[in-house]
Image (cartoon, rainbow, N blue to C red; front, side, top):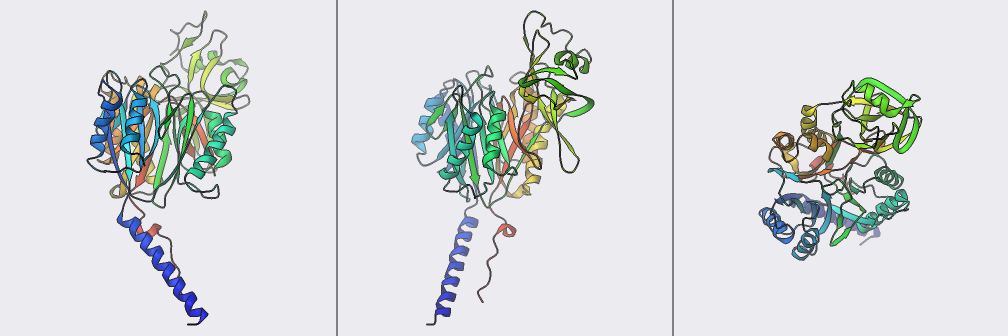
Length: 447
């Protein structure tokens, strides 16, 4: 046999192996199955109920996402999941007061949790979780977390992930997304939320069988199948804006040379007249429909608003903000209403499918994060409006499984801008079941 014939035989064998591998992936589409519980016992009793639901559809998950309220037996929950599925990777975090799923809203008297299991498909996952200590260079820490998650997935930084999942540390979010942007190309979809307890304080993040508090967690997903993501605020501007003339970080002191709080009160046309902070600072939770926002102008000329909610009115006329601001930047007054807060959850689900070019028939399922402050405005656990918000996602997903939780800040990606942290937003990722024929790599014929 000549050398040329040997080379041809080797090439044909390689093609056959590639096609066989592709056929296996195609024969085993990604399956997603969820479960949830509001069992007042929490811990093992609650997660056992959730597992029983999940097992109706998949038996051996390779990857599990956990959203759980705080002080709901998290350590027992994690131990139970690790014992039942020792080979499954676990990405988890605390969320505010409740969870939701394709079955509806779940707010228990003692707590709530939801899990999503992934099986089949070609997902490769890498996870890194870090303790965030006082004085830490958080941007450098998050960059290191991305590098570790890359290695954990068996990849290199030259391999571009399909998706970034993030559980961010309260008060450190802007530094975290900055660090991620240093390590990853700025056009990778990111779906993140700030984990918290029921008092909106620090919560846990969970990697496999370990809990970190305060911590951050990064998950990198690699797949040939389509993944779509979106992050949306639903607010519009009223042409009220000004340049930040004093302030930095999370404290906004001046707008156009005047006290920032005074300007904000004027822009709101008396909405905050009943708030007296002359003697001490006051926590403000009534402004979920009229926050301030940073604006991003895209190369197309389109403006995108990133809400930064004033969270506290201070006696010195300053505002404590839910995201970083910088002197010299423009700040905008934006508005919405309860209807917009409800409907944006469905909008973001549909946008995720559009962005990922995923047909409804091909959807395996999704993950959703929704702002806790917006949920409080809708009366989370009181009345029907939060359930109606979840209903908007259910309508958009048309019976496909999803789980979600309420977070104290949201992180995402704006194409043409990069990664960001904002408030009062809704964020979702949708996964396709498998690669479509058009997504398969073309194999050249052997001459």
